[in-house]
Image (cartoon, rainbow, N blue to C red; front, side, top):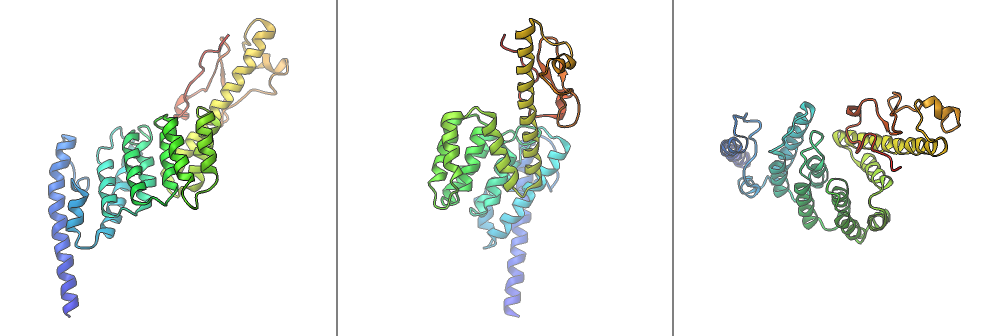
Length: 299
């Protein structure tokens, strides 16, 4: 009876603390957003350390709750195509303050933060801070170095920082050999679509998060289209060099043996051939990560 009474008192205090924290956080969110918000959106506190002090020993449980809230917050806005994710970084900060060893919050949270809007929060610097925090707390978990290198490479285009992250990760006991390979590729062939494709393929094959897997797939498809556009433009240039004019239709390339048939994108829609020899997709919105659409050829 005594132990049950103590447990009831403990949980009661915890609920009171959380309610008080929610009220404080409501005021903080109103300042951040400048608009009215719901109590659901306000379920976070300005400081993870404050939450931890109020957790009464249940910090790991609260970390799971806040991580779930972060995922829900991101997912709901991602579905709506939101342009702003003001609470994502604070939610992840508190989650990892409560449980510094919650690896999934660092790995997946960093991807949520780093991706361009609307696929993510568009905050790669915040993603780097989160991952560096995770590495300090979990220095022997080499995959955090991989994700850090990934963010530096894909979202910040800082190839030197990516090389350093992959290299440090390769030195962690148990790290897979390709971490060293990626460090070398950063040093020698950083600005290479094949490198980007390899990184996204690794993310796609290893993540368990559906949102991240979908994003990785979109990136891989866009990289494939990029490669196909480059190859098609090489062939139109070859036609120009032999004929003195660019092809007007795909049939011109087919007749001289430069193509076997009308080229189509991954959705089965024919690519568009322009009179200047450049090639474009029919609908750029279908490939949101495509870096260019029919850039001019070097004549």
